[in-house]
Length: 90
Image (cartoon, rainbow, N blue to C red; front, side):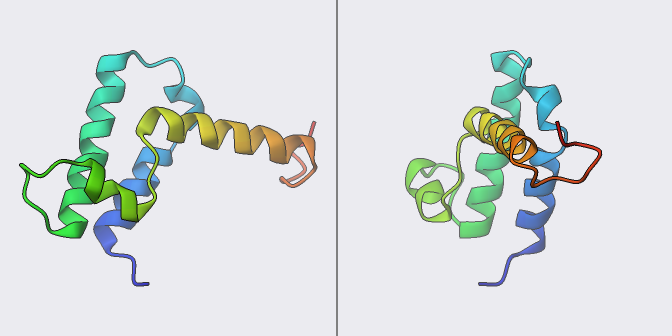
């Protein structure tokens, strides 16, 4: 599958510094969710009035809040199981 530049750019920006996003309030997380939803609609070439659920489902994207939690938990798991660079290992 060919990844479009808009997907690669937006996903890398949304995933950048996830540990800092854990304490964001709902309004700021909502703004990030809007960016992710807009990117999904752009990638799938759907109308801005289309419901987001059927657009995001085939992309297998998590909502922003769960995406942040998942990335932090994955990083923690890798740190405990020595699957990270030496400067991160516990």
